[in-house]
Length: 258
Image (cartoon, rainbow, N blue to C red; front, side, top):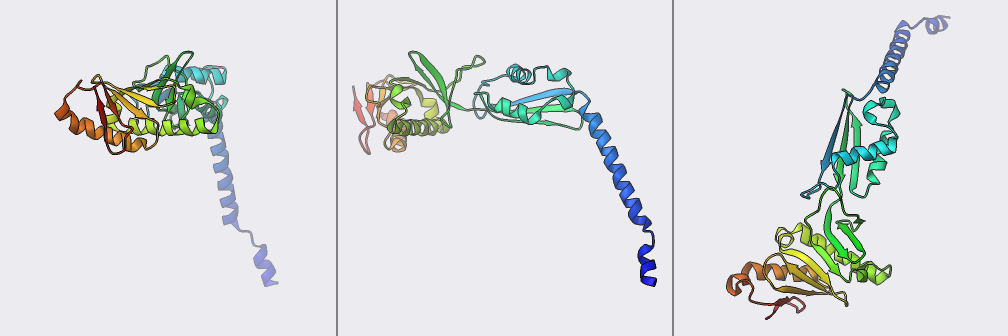
């Protein structure tokens, strides 16, 4: 009987704890409902240019994408009306945007963080013009800015056909252009790359009159490093504008021609 009586005793501490938890839940729910029915205080849009000197998409462009997706101006809408995840996905579907992050702070300020794609070359030929990014994507030219990247001209189709060979060549071309983009000296040196009918490359420097006969993309890193050494050391002896071309096709040497 004593055991039964002990279990029937009322535990006031548990009741108080449960009631307190329910009150917290109710207050939290009301606070959330009040917050989502509130409006945004202000917008803050930040664009990370991803190592480039210009923005492919400006803040007005970002706001335009947001309005088109929502169907209304988020500046005059309630917080609950905005699909944050859907809006992020819409922004990331834009060809100029690599990543989008959206969050709301405690003061109802909406933060939109944009990382843009990084163009490493501009392909230009009759009827076809686009930027190529460091991940191999092709994106349209931007009306907001012209990027300072090497221009690729000539037989571009040699690298764009949907054959296995062309896909491999395109991958190698992306790697070669990325290598140049990440090297301070090479990115400052090469202004244009022309592709001939055989798919071999001719590089045109920003200074000097010589053409750089690059050949195919085999051992492109070795060729580029060889080119760097020549410009860093050979030019001090040969001077500028002495040769009409530099040929990198030969292993471990550079052929000079007038």
